[in-house]
Image (cartoon, rainbow, N blue to C red):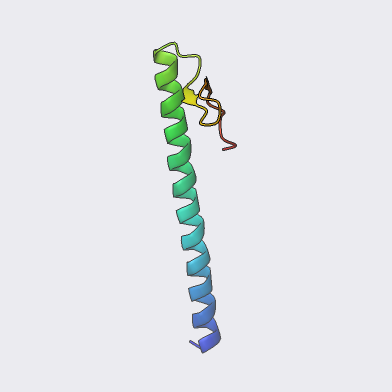
Length: 66
């Protein structure tokens, strides 16, 4: 097995590992969002209130671009 084949296998392995880590991170993020929405539906919540530090008023939390 030549050095170029070893490097190729290592590069493919690294890319595969990176895709796997990205997939797991996305799956966890989506699972957390689904759990949050399911909990809000159980409680009949219309949204989450957050305190605006500038005005001191509570506003609905904006959904992040997920």
